[in-house]
Image (cartoon, rainbow, N blue to C red; front, side, top):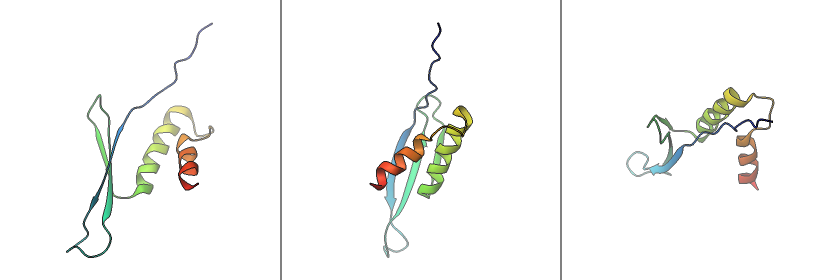
Amino acid sequence: MSKATPYRQLFFLYIWAEPQGAGEGLPVWRYRLEDPLTREQHVFSQLSALVGFLQARQDRTTGSDQRSAVEYFLKEVKQ
């Protein structure tokens, strides 16, 4: 009997706020994912783009018919 090794991806997530214009209005949030093994980086200016990237990575490796870990995370955050 063989056990399939679960597919895993590890990213460091960096989140920071940048001032908008001449200090007017709310700061703009930025997001960066970094693969610690390859040092590949992905930078996002919108949270929805970050979530979309993670969803696409998961769908590519597990198939889109499974319940998404991203969907689970978003449901928990909204509570």
